[in-house]
Length: 259
Ligand code: 13P
Figure (cartoon, rainbow, N blue to C red):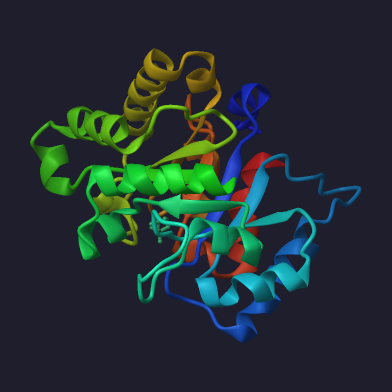
């Protein structure tokens, strides 16, 4: 498959971000996904690491399902370990609930909760402290893209949102153009390639060999129909998937790019 070229160097990660969706009945989707992923003689085995990031309420329940080959992640964490922060959840709590990773700095949190690069950086540090892999999100708005500011914006977010000490194991970058999220629109493969190549260079400049190995995911309207093409772009090491991760059948359709 076309995604193979990228896969040879770095093991891809395909993570599903359920956002504020899902209830008890949707645990069946996790079971269905695990069944679909079972290697068959004809179907082969998904070579990418697979993860679902459900709302925090479902995390321990999903951990109990013990779906083979599917890791779990949170969607946000507080920077502190504990304390008087009503409604917040610490990275340590997510870990205890069964998470291996946590999404941090998603554009919806940057917009809805005014999360600055500085706040995002503190949360990435918290994830590392707890032993979680931080999936740190960046991406330009449509206005910024139209103004030709895309590279400047994402490089600035990358610089400001990552603490020192990031490694390929404890950090994943997700490039999600804000205008592509939930819109059905995607950048061209050339546009994706341009951003991912610039991010790779910036990661290598700052983190050396670790930066060379750090996974850079693409996110924004990834679907079964476009996954193969997007995952084959140089320096695209997987996907962060929203809507199409809610149903096992659609998500598996995306994972097929890594069969
Ligand atoms: P969609 O795949 O629904 O566009 O969402 C992308 C996203 O925001 C994943 O974090």
